[in-house]
Length: 297
Image 1 (cartoon, rainbow, N blue to C red):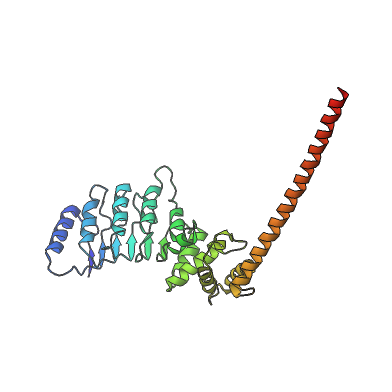
Image 2 (image 1 turned 90 degrees about the horizontal axis):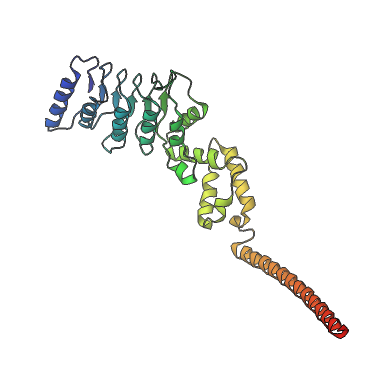
């Protein structure tokens, strides 16, 4: 069921009546699409809109375009997007008063949202300048680069972000990556291009459990469109951790490490012995000098 109350003359009253009617229903509301566009909705009247949306547990499309929604409304939308009851797949908040702070709230709210696929934000300008808002907050949400785990836990669901200007190249690439049906593969690709490109840092892998490290290798080597990059990363890891292939074995590697430690300790002992002999010679020279001084006296 689709409901369109755009350009409503008395919106608050209509929303109130609909919400109460839906709450009184014995069956779950069948409404899947709700359009409240061009209704002069402000932050003050926005709580009633969210209450109506919450009364529609099957709601998948919400059109709030061409209103006057600001930071308060964005905060309410962000809270709604984080509720388990929210099943939205499309959200349109274009042509409102959403500034950079509002966009940041919306972006952060979909960090753990696995349903929303399309977001319309065009026509929202900065409050201080006559230019479009920045979409950079979505880059971090779609691909958190702080760690491998953070990248894995990023949003892999949002596929489209409509914007009057051209979408930033890195964001466009992430949105395109998210369109893959296999979210496991999406996470894998993001981790590859974020943490395993070029001369990536090997330090985190040095302290990994061997079984976990072996799993990482198998995961990286899986067939995919990024096969060349995957094999490059695998090669670099194997080159630095050859014991993963059993050549030499883990036991042999341990013996080799112990042998290296023994050689290092022996070298240290030799150095200390040489320093001790030098000190003895210097001590003897001092004693001889003291004897000559006493004899002269």
